[in-house]
Length: 367
Image (cartoon, rainbow, N blue to C red; front, side, top):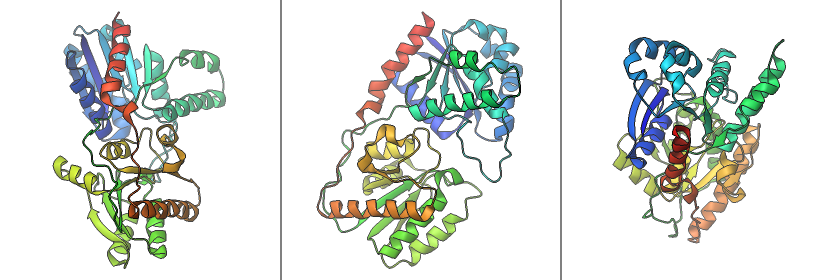
């Protein structure tokens, strides 16, 4: 089987997904076109122009399936390269623009949402990495259709999107990962997300303050991808952790080496999220696969993956949410001291389980 992959905004999570697919479906002949994850507005609107003008020969070759990410301007690309109209196409949504939180630097625009919608409608199959992603996309589309001034095909669009499916990004489970069962006097907490506003640095700051106030014995490992301009909260977090009598700053900054990062995961007890945007939560899931216990907010994709014992109460009030999370951390510290930290089963997300499901989709499309 020959599959053309179109990844128009090839961020780390997209790269992880594609790498897993290619590794676990080695009998497929993969051809990949990707564009770097920068210049967001130009990238999502210009990828069809870039590829149609510069990669026409690749696009016009013979394939059994086209697999495009949701950032791909599929409807325009099919118009510019008619040969693509003859190939069955699946679109994969790592995220959707209807529930992505706006930053202060972003201009409110409906265009990314319209592009998401057109791409979904232009595809033969639409796949989402979580139920949260699927449901927020569908409700966002319906809300958009309801507020358009006239000639909005609300019912027809809903019917066209009725068969969207959920198929998560797979995780390579480490069957030899250490279970965090040994007793200890300090809790080792990992925060391993992008250092950006949507991962809740303001909420992390509030939590660190509350943990310091309560005198919890916690070692914080603050990792995750950093950028040229990070939110101001990280400077405050570093200052508090460095000066605290009870908290310890055990790791600060991105760990690029995979072996060293694996060591960090193996050192930690808890994988913490404070995010206000996570469509699947890969960084937490990968840490859980390595043996960490999740501690996540009761929102976004997380109720789909983890029981209530691993979730803390969400709140728009940062102080209230920090208190709820801190209370959970205090409970986990007691469990750590007693050697009772529990492991979490995420075997349903193993690539060995999910790869055959992807293959089934591709075979149905190409038949």
